[in-house]
Amino acid sequence: MNKFYNFEIPVPPLETQKRIVSILDKFEMLANSLSDGLPAEIEARKKQYEYYRDKLLDFKDVGGGYYLLEKLVQWLPLGEIATEMYRGAGIKRDEVTEEGIPCVRYGEIYTTYDIWFDDCVSHTDEDTIPSKKYFERGDILFAITGESVEEIAKSCAYVGNEKCLAGGDIVVMKHRQNPKYLAYALSTTDAQRQKSKGKIKSKVVHASVPSISSIVIPLPPLAIQGWIAEILDKFHSLATDISEGIPAEIEARKKQYEYYRDKLLSFDDIRSFRQADKFLGF
Image (cartoon, rainbow, N blue to C red; front, top):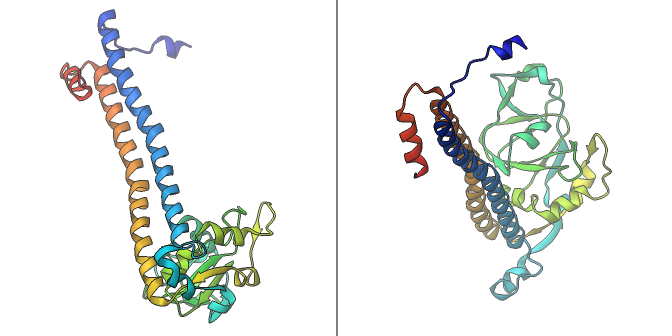
């Protein structure tokens, strides 16, 4: 308690205290409105993106000018779309290196990679991996182990140019379609519902090659696949920019609030009052 008794703080006259409290209340309100309002904006934009993605990839009820296109769309299981489908081989955490052949471990599909990626964050020494399972440009990767039924078998497309190694609990799918289109089609609400079907909530959730092979997606001609992928790339880029930019804006405003709070309460520079007043529009 003696330490608390010896804490020193600046104590200006009551009127000055009220003035400082008034300024900091407004700062606090601004900071809270940003922290509460902007994440809600991110969530709204995310739902908007998901809505249009699902609509664009739903050829069952499109009507209008899409009538002829609907006739060209096939609904096929991945087992018929794939030219090859196989499991990766284990790459342990302590086998990940700074240099070497690029590789992907299944957890990174959940935490690091989005719809598609062109560069691996991890590498390993190829000579130390006894059973090598490779993936190349255009291949689709599925994480077949996870902690959530709702996210199990998350997938992404590799569109880089290097030959890479697939770690354990990953399924690699080779095909002759547009890889970005397949990745978007496999991220829809309907596709995720199929991935989650029959899975039981537990500490670890598993999928398999047979269950992935049975997922049915719409498959239009290649030219249409490319067109849809291009549109969704733009939507996805907008959603990503908002998701990354808004938290950065919140952090910048938080630091600005902390700066003026500390300046106001240090009394080292009386100009800090005028700076805060000007910023808040007094």
